[in-house]
Image (cartoon, rainbow, N blue to C red):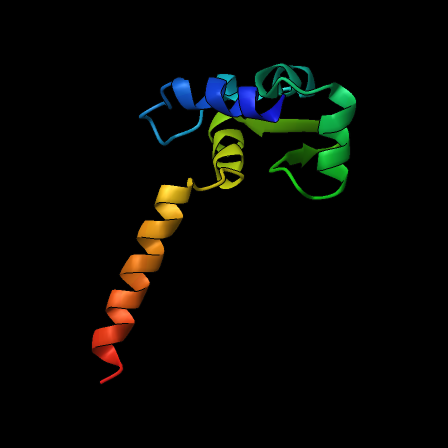
Length: 98
């Protein structure tokens, strides 16, 4: 379920305008639909401080960009990416340890 959400979010083009507009904010309902998660799950993630949220009074607001960034942080590297990093690390340390 989360993997499908990540794919959906990654396929969308983020806004190039860095200044946020009122329509850029999502309600809890919109955020749960955007993430493809139940509202209760979004509330749980919010309460645990695991998801970026703006709280104004009793209302919760989310931005698409912050939610996309949050999803991307959960991305797992492929075996090829891990192997490449390991190779680069070994090569770097091989020449700096002399």
